[in-house]
Length: 450
Image 1 (cartoon, rainbow, N blue to C red):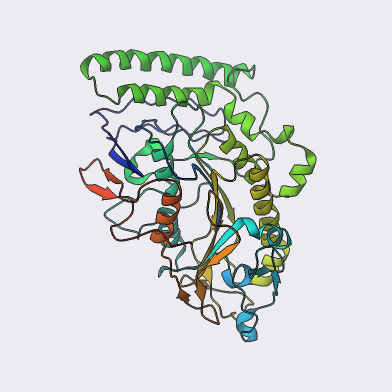
Image 2: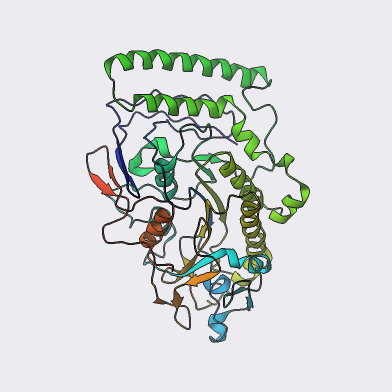
């Protein structure tokens, strides 16, 4: 795990939040706070911390765990099988019934089939960018890629709107940040805290308030404390010159960033040694299972948005072998266990589980027993957060090429998630250049789910 402090003094944006009927406006002063952060300590990429006023959501959900399937998962082999299609389209897998009446999914999802009555499938997500980078940018920001605007990821956007300044844990955490996971025009304060996705356990002695290598942790602690003292001196003079209403908020966020380093909050949330063996087995032995469990613990500790990236879905060759032997079993265990674990802990109603990739795969199987890029028809799975459960929205044609009912763009998908979080889609953000940008373009409404 690595820690890479970033020093940046960019001007933070003005954010006008509309959370349902509530409107809060915050203005950051001409200077940003002094960046804090020493060398490698707890496996975080700690960005400069600038706090914008947090709004109170009136939506049913307040947290999100995203399972990002990097590379383009094959909808037609997972969520929207076409058993009546010709051989070169339907592929090798068969559909099975689930606990949700009328919904069938892949035979290699036996555990997910048991909990599909907690899930919502949107089978009509569609866009026109079958390229990994831009496609991921579109799905992760909900905005068409633009050379003129650096849009924030949904994780940065949600955490900037719903972060709780009283919680000493980063609001936005990633396990291997996916492409376009950054904060864009929101500023580096809302970049994710990126953690090592493959660490089986955290190394001992890395916590600042415990003894460790004097040439490493103890020395860095002293350096860090000196930097805190220096920042306070700067802050004191800064306060005398500027009584901006957000200055206190800046201090609170800086203290939160310090707490991440000085306390064991992160480490305790990520340490799976305290988990029962039975629960660990349910999540599976792969990195996705471990990180899905850690994600639920981070949410319980106060994080707002956690992303676990699971790659390998770019199956141009050997699609069915790769899915059958590796990807589908891991996803089946980890995703079903995550949903059940949140439910057991009383967190599912307030937490959205969001599983999606940048695009899907072609309905037609190529000459290498693989499927190529296809963005015109894909599926997003949502669970918890007050979403309608045990149902599917949208449909594709008989061979899975195009949506024929309730087409849903990535922007509409973003609007749907924000609406469920109680974040008004009319929210506007003023960028450092002075431009007002809506978080959802005008005229794009959330998907009708009822």
